[in-house]
Length: 374
View 1 (tube, rainbow, N blue to C red):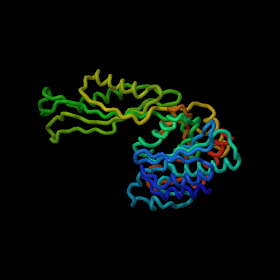
View 2 (cartoon, rainbow, N blue to C red):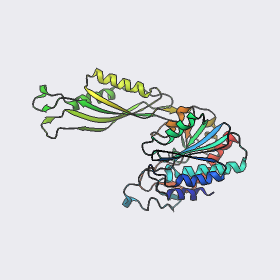
View 3 (spheres, one colour):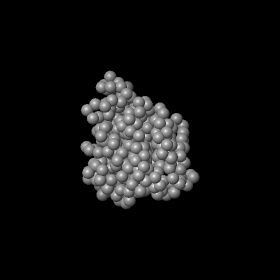
View 4 (tube, rainbow, N blue to C red):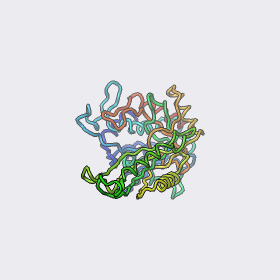
């Protein structure tokens, strides 16, 4: 099986979230030929695929997503985003790096591994979803719940997210920060700007809240995570006239936080601060995911050794970046790492991946399999 050609076939399917556009069927055909049992799992408008080869443990799972973000303004692309093209050693197309090349390399790696080890120990599995780039409510999280309900577990998981920074394999994600957003309405008293004693300005109240959070860091981070960050991402206020103090302000803010917090403890801290400042508010919390961390062990050792052997690269174990579906897998007691292509072009116009990196990634995944199940 040619991993480059499989990547191209996947790109040709316009699988904008939550559409899978036949990608999982294509991948399933290859996996079925390799002896995998296929279990399509559809929740809501999301297609998921759980595929497993073997009945015993340990279980090494490859996880990824077939959905992609919208291409954006088509006139800014140098080609049709869903008509893959190779130019100067680069394969262009939406999803090339995030993350159809990884999926193709994973399938190819299993093919190579089984050719060398037709009776491996344990089991190999694939968890593939079409709901990673969107709300992520009917994808990996639901599959993990289904597996847990029937007592099926995963020991190690390799997620194909584009983790690399400058060269393939230079960075591997071993964790991610948590992401917690708050949607707040600050209640004030509307009135004429010339009579400040008769109004309560919710903009000023919200400013005191953000200034207080900015003045005193929530933590200093730890050996694995940077300090928790706070950002306001949206603010709306105004009464429609330049001489009127508005009665309400609505805003959204976000924390990216380390394992020193849980979403409950962080929310309690913020609400305590709002009370101390005397704000009149209503607040809704949106949890995107708790932080997770895979400490050094068999999986991290296998990954580092495989990268050194196949790529000749010393890799950095990192917890940087945004969220990924690893946040839904790790809480089930799974060691999770993320290894994939260079991420410089993901979600951008003319997204691309180095053609040679697809085969190099395939060899690296195969080397991980050999160390853990060979």
